[in-house]
Length: 299
Image (cartoon, rainbow, N blue to C red; front, side, top):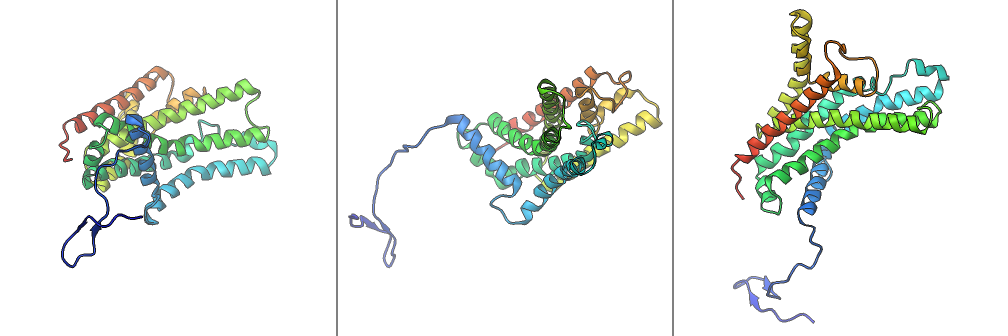
């Protein structure tokens, strides 16, 4: 039975208070880890446009679809054409050349969408009013961007590996299969971490999504053009290749797979590629933390 109303909001008002008092929360208390999981889940939904109008779904779904299209074509060719098809199918390292544009396009749209919008709308203050602090907020956002990039860096090569294996065109033996699987994981992690760091660093610099997106989409291919001119035309040191954000991770992927491709081993040894990727990533992380450590947030 419902208790009689204890108060009425005012003359002529139908609002009534039926109960008063404080009720304790009795659900699970997940702490900081639960807050980070919730942030990652919300960020991924936001990046994919889930729960939003159709126009927010078009770009992420189209970019992800374009990354899988070449893999689907190559798998179809392998299934329909004789085994000699292997001679003109790309290797796992070469496949990244077909999806390089989709990778940096996704980095250009996802990072600004997840970082800039929170600062511009004031949602960052709401997040920081919860158990989340700044380092864990940034950690959750980085996981979200990295997970989105894995959709286009890990998914298509894994699709090819599994499909070719089912058609007896994959690696010979279980150990060789595990080796290729590990190489694909390492390659996906390298390019995903680098572009996650660059995307978030630029997004931490401005709260305007179009400005951050345009900067990312200009910086990555622009660095390739500038360094190629300096090395090939001006004949400067090949070490300047390490400033090339477009081809640096792809050159390292060739080395991970033990394939020929990218830059000369003499001009750019493998250890310099690892060092350059680590330096770009660490520099971006330091810049992101500097920006957010000094950021005034209204709660």
